[in-house]
Length: 260
Ligand SMILES: Cc1cc(N2CCCCCC2)n2ncc(-c3ccc(F)cc3)c2n1
Image 1 (cartoon, rainbow, N blue to C red):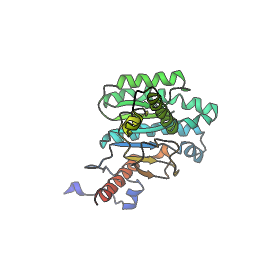
Image 2: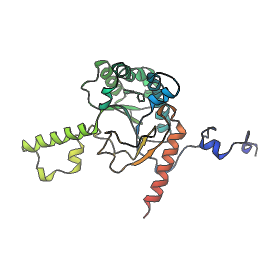
Image 3: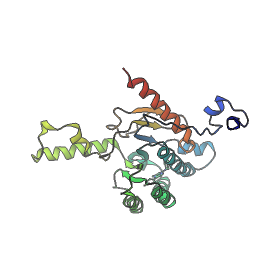
């Protein structure tokens, strides 16, 4: 009986504003197998606090760890995080140099725990233009975790969807010109195997933070049937409960649309 006694009184509003850390997290059926996140708002988060943009990116990196653990906890199988787009090269040189150091900083801090939690690190993106030190850090993490069978943590790094699809089309065209495939027999799976997401299921749920309502050249083919969930919250302040709100909404839609 005493176990049910509430210490202090909090309202539904407190819960919705995450003033109170409710232990509840989504369970049961329809946990999305693959969640993809466009982690936006890092610069604005810093600006709102009178901090330099790189402070936003650094706090964004802490959110990566927080949300990876939260997704793993509820049984998500694949978590794809849009860490750097092909358009991000237009940022100031100093900012790009800082961003290009974050993969190795994150991995030097977290790879041990990722291994303990059986997480497999993958990278989806174009290795051209990436600094050698960035590629080396990511490829070492991919190698070390390649046999892990738990959550797949897939970083979209120097990724652009149109370039990805154009390259897949060119590879198919080359095969057709060489007579290695019958043009009229090409089906969607023949195209998909040349995408950088090859081997991964399409995202069930796309989350984008900071109020932007665009895809920004992210997984345009793969998101064809995905649920989209947008929030005004800036990525550095995106909490476990925000993730769980998105998953609960996904489960609600699946129940509603899953029927007739
Ligand atoms: C370029 C960049 C930016 C980056 N930000 C932090 C998250 C918000 C978005 C912008 C800044 N993060 N966070 C983690 C990584 C990363 C990438 C590959 C990898 F194998 C391990 C970690 C990362 N990479």
